[in-house]
Structure formats: C-alpha cells, structure tokens
Length: 254
Ligand code: HEC
Image 1 (cartoon, rainbow, N blue to C red):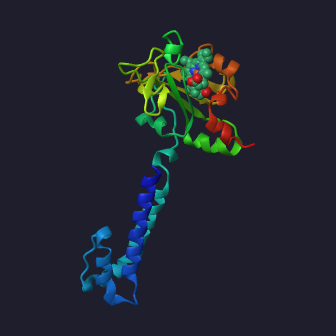
Image 2: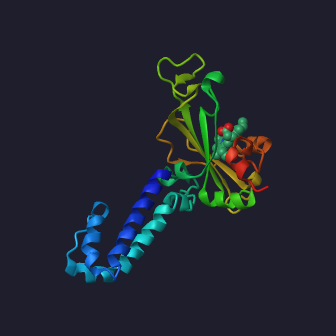
C-alpha cells in the first residue's frame, strides 16, 4: 500500500516538474528539448509552435496534477467514507455494501481453533475486528465510542490442508501455528441511542451467520440475552472487548 502511494506521488511530482519546465518563459527554445528529456514519463511530443498554447494550459494542468496529488496521498477513499447502516422495512440490518468493513481500521484479532474447543468453537475460528473510520477518528481523540459506532467482526476458519497436525495447526514457513483459511462468519454491533434506546449501553448485535460465504443478506437484531449480556458482563470498555484489541489500547488517550 505504502509503496503504491509512494509510486503514485512520485509519478505526479515528475509530471508536475515536467509541466513547470515546459512553462518556463525565459527558455522558449528549450521546450522541445525539455519535452524530449521527459518523454519517458509523459510521452510528450511538442512542436515549437505548440509552445504558446502549452504555456497557457500549464496552470490548468498544474491544478489537475495538484488535485491528483491530493487524492493520491489519501490513504484510501474507502476510509473516508461514512458508513450509514441500512435497514429493510422490517428493521433487518442489510449486509454492508461491498463488504466495506474489510477496508476499515483494524483493532485486533484472535483465534479460537475448533481443535482446542472440542471441535466446536462458539466463534470459529480466527476473529478479526474492525471499527468504522468516523468512530475511529473519534476514539483517537476521546478514547470513547461515539454514538453511531459500528464494530465489525469477521471470522475465518483455520487453514486445514491434508497433513495438518493433530491439534489442527500446520507447519508453515513462518512456524507451526494456526493460519487463516476461508471466511466463515460475520457480525456487527452498533451503538445508537436513537435506534436502540432500550438496549443496555445502546448497543445492538447482529449476526450474518457463522458459515462460509455468501453471508445472509440481512440480519435481525439479536435479543440482549443472546449477545449483549455476555459483552456487558465481560468486556473491558463500554461493552467492547478492548482487552483483546491492542490497537485500541495503544491509541486511547491517556
Ligand atoms: C460468551 C460471550 C459472548 C457472547 C454470547 C457473544 N459475544 Fe461477541 N464477543 C465476545 C468476545 C470475547 C469478543 C472479543 C473478540 C472475540 O473473542 O472474538 C466479542 C466480540 C464481538 C464483536 C467485536 C466488537 C466487540 O464488542 O468487542 C462483535 C461485533 C460481536 N462480538 C458480536 C456478537 C454477536 C452478534 C453476538 C450474538 C450473536 C455475540 N457477539 C455474542 C464474547 C461474546
């Protein structure tokens, strides 16, 4: 990701420098020459009589390049996008469009392999938790979950090729352990006073299934006893299991 941004920025800068050079009024005869010297990057083929119109267009081109630069240096368009939960007429939550949570800030991850849970882990097996970007920005500043926070938890099975060890682990190049296989479940929790005035902490819980993709397209709100109660009893911070999320712990303002 980083290197892609670097490359894009580098390209934009190269273009910008080229445009500025073409524009330089004190060296009108060098236009052809300069253009040729940047041919590799820009594929510019100028005739001398085009110099005037290029000079006029240059400020505009520079503007376009700057606009591109601003976009290119933003980490990801998706991270800027506010997610608004969508519901069906009968109040079922719709699966977020484009599986957008996979592009949200990551907060933590753990693994409860079936092989260590009598073959039936309640949440099989790797868990990866994300927070929506707007609430992440709020958390960084305040160390609290704003009204409107959405946390997403996606599961994947442990990778289990033939020849896996008896405890379900595999021997891979980085060591023996539990590696990620296929996606195997998706859940969301949303905090909203307006939508859930009666839920403890105003948190509501939805599950789109514990199975391989495709997930269910919609999910009904779970009764508080099914989900919320365990969160209320055991989570470290406002119904959220921050004790397992190093990104939140490290970021929370002291
Ligand atoms: C027995 C306790 C328990 C129950 C019941 C439970 N959870 Fe959780 N939940 C956890 C724990 C522990 C975590 C921390 C991460 C992990 O282990 O996956 C968690 C994390 C989550 C997260 C990530 C954000 C957070 O709050 O930490 C979501 C979303 C979630 N659970 C949804 C649900 C849903 C939906 C249900 C009901 C279908 C449910 N949970 C029921 C224990 C529980």
